[in-house]
Amino acid sequence: MKALVTGCAGFIGSHITESLLEKGIEVVGIDCFTDYYPRRYKENNLKNAQKNKNFTLFEEDILSLEEFPEVDYIFHQAAQAGVRKSWGSDFSQYTSDNILVTQKLLEYYKNKSIKKFVYASSSSVYGDAGLPMKEDLLLKPVSPYGVTKLAAENLCYLYYKNYGIPTVSLRYFTVYGPRQRPEMAIHLFVKAILGNELITVYGDGKQTRDFTYVSDIVDANLKAAFGDVEGEVFNVGGGTKISVNELIRILEENIGMTANVEYIEKQKGDVNDTLADSNKIRILGWEPSVKIHEGIGNFVKWYKGLG
Ligand code: NAD
Image (tube, rainbow, N blue to C red; front, side, top):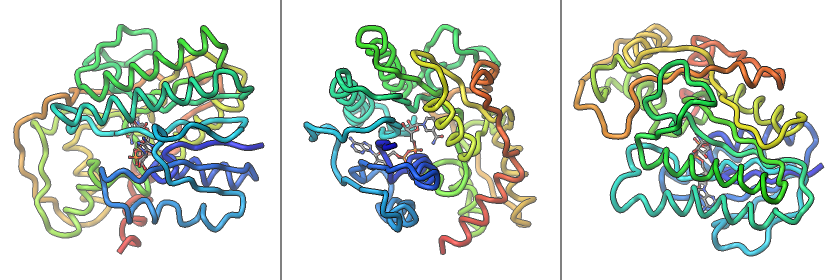
């Protein structure tokens, strides 16, 4: 068995890569190490995978490639992530890395016999929809990032419908855990608390997120790939509705230090609240298994080892 993981050097892609390798599956990874955050994090993410002889890395931009490896499974994680950067002239990076890249892969694989194409979608496709967010709600993203993630999700569906590519889209809800991107809240907050620096919260901190631990995201990817399902979209949410202020309290408790917090204006594109209705994905036998206190503990341990 052979799999392609796009964005293999990123936070989530590197965990999926390792998990596949642990199962004895050969992995080809593609990543162009975009400069959204420093390269050293991505090199660190790949350290374990690169010790495995079943792993091959292509450091390439997907848009510059004409050929892709013959594989059974595709885990498409490559993207320009982040809501706040997606305005203005940066939008073209989002249309390239999120929409054009996905279309390029689907075009290439439309006539190949693959077993599954799993796409990393996002809760940001919902915008400020009512809670809990259910797959069949009307989708009205409130950020340019969300628009590109939804466009790519729609591409996956239409290549399934027209060409029979067995796609599955997974809408991840705020993912955290070891290797979380350095500009994401938990990573920033832990760094600030340990370094006695100021935490900047956008808005009043009462906005809530459904936090999902990264090993649960990996598990959902594997179940979507190996399960008997195609042309579908599933939420993947940890099921915990926690405000930013509550999150800071959990971090203070775990680290044993007090946070210094400043509150500034809410950012455009940030949704107020997210909470997944994760009932649909139960048909794949998926359930979140890591609770927030345990997951935060794992992150802090990892962060301290990062040096
Ligand atoms: P990440 O930035 O750590 O990883 C993405 C990787 O893709 C990066 O290493 C980057 O270099 C690579 N990449 C981007 N464009 C590329 C291109 N054109 N060619 C080759 N490689 C390219 O992000 P992440 O947090 O691991 O997110 C992974 C996926 O999950 C993304 O699709 C993201 O939109 C989605 N997602 C993430 C979250 C979250 O909370 N982290 C939530 C919802 C959805």
